[in-house]
Every structure is written in C-alpha cells, then in structure tokens.
Length: 366
Ligand code: PHE
Image (cartoon, rainbow, N blue to C red; front, side):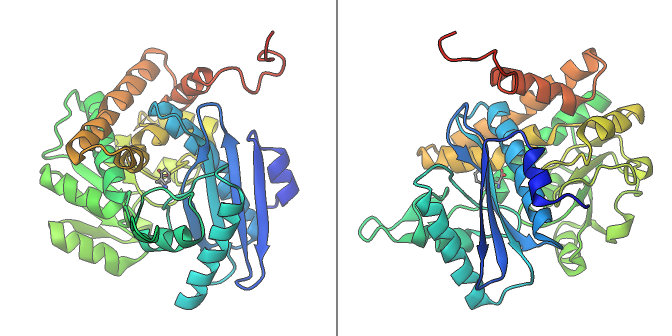
C-alpha cells in the first residue's frame, strides 16, 4: 500500500475529512464525513494500531462510505461518517482514557456535524469516556441531575441479531429454506458481534465453527456453545454452508476467494470485498452467494437509534428482523439480473440518494 494521504483523499467520493495529530499519544484522529443527503453523518469510532497513519485514514474513508450505504439501505435518516483513532502503538489504560477525552473534545468542537458510537476496538466504556467531553455520542444514558454519562448501550448484540436475519435470507437463497438447524456456519471473529452471533446460531441448532486471532477467546466462545475452534489460517479453506466474517474488512479478495469452501457469505464485517467490483464477480463466478455487508450489519445502527427513540426491546427486535427481508430482496434482485449482489444493492441504494456524483444534474432550483 503506497498511497499517500493526499492520494487517498483525492480519490474519495465523500464530503470532507477532519484530521488531527494527537501529540501525547502519537496517534492520528481521522473523522470522515461521507454523505449528508439523508441526515447528519454518523458512524462508529474505530481504534487500533495501524502500520501507517495512511492505513487508518483509508479505513475511515471506506468505513464512512459504508455507513452511507448502511443507513440508506436500512431506511434510516442519517448520513455516512466514521472516525478512526489510528494508534502507532498500544496505549496503557490511563493514556487510553486521556486520548479518548481529547478525541471527545475534537468531536464536541464539530457541534454535531458528526455523531459517533462504538466500533471495532472501542467499548461502551470508551463511549462513556468520550461522552464526558462531547454530547455527540450515540447510545449514552445520562444522569438526569448532573448530565453525567452513566452507561452506554452495546450495539454488538443488536448487530448479531441482524446478522442472524441476514444468514437466514442467504440460506433461503441457496437452499430454498431459511432453517438453520443442521447447517454449518463459520464465524470469523468472536468479539462484540461474533460472540453473541455464535450463541444465536447454536440456539438455532446450527453447527458453529469459530476462528479468531485471539485463539483463547475463540476457545472460550466455542466451549460455551459446543462449537469447534479453527486456527485463524484455517478459516478460509474450511468447508461450511455459510461463512460469517465478523472482524476486519477486505477479507474477500483474490487470495481468499479461491480458497473458500462455503456456499454463501453473510457477516457483520464492514467492506468485506477488497475490490468491490472484481471480488464481487469472483464470488459470483464461484457460485458463492454474498449478502451485501451493509445490509447484513445494520442491526447495531438500528438498535442504537431505536433505543434512543424510546422503543421497546420487542419493537427493536422486530425492526432488526426486517433485515431478513432486505437481504432476501437484494439477493433475489441480483439473481434475476445476473449480477453480484453487493454491486446491485449498492447501485440501487446510491440511486435512492439522488444524483450526487453526477455534476450538473442536481443543481438546486433547476
Ligand atoms: N459501529 C457500528 C456500525 O457500524 C455501530 C454504530 C452504528 C455506531 C451507528 C454508531 C452509529 O454499525
């Protein structure tokens, strides 16, 4: 990867990027605002060590675009945004808190132009820390007297429920039945989403295989549900019905796709296709049904937003379960058009956002 930060920003189709070097932690803060057609740019805050700051920026740009698709695809009136705290080294506890607070001050300075929430590498506790410095954090409950953040909602279990719905739709497309009992599902990454997903799948009677870079965590999750553990390097080549990637993105690429021995892919990881067009086609050529990740992973966003609006858990679950219909529709449409599902769904969602990207066609008043 040799692109400079300038190249990355020049090649991006979003609105703007806010960036800042955080001297004390030697990390970079990136806030990417991709689109505001439907509402204010919103999306989680990812925090992890990247080899180079530009890798963190690239993640922010791609993830923010993914949020635009996710909100529009789920019928939520929010725009796409994402932030990345690109660490150059792991931080100690005190340093972590101080860094999150400084990030919170930057967030507050934007006066609501971007709202954040939990994402890979951040926790509900981290969100409560950021919320000490900023009002613009999703999922925070405050103490009515002091306005102090007291707790934060974990979107992971909501996302997991949506992934289960997406897996059902994918099974339906492949096998003609949404039933998961007796199917083998391979969950890559058993963190905040993958762990509750593995449990839900086991409850459905599926055979669950799990793999995680943290092998102790994989063993722990597998033991609790009578599942089997795979070493990280075995994940792609292990036979299964559905592969559910729930960790980092770009795992469907020219190296992994030829190895896959699954019938379908449906998981929560954002931006699963390394190259959207080419890798989507590679999967299709192999007869593997790929459920668009931005539809499958919308449960967390739905959960956070519907909770904040005061809906009951039963109502939230019902709304999240609609993901099965949205994925089913997308898979049927793509099959009817002989197209890769991600490309077809993306085209439809972008069209629903209007003619942005087509200069001259959307001039106000014309
Ligand atoms: N980061 C999660 C996602 O991308 C949850 C989240 C959704 C966080 C919306 C903030 C806002 O879906």
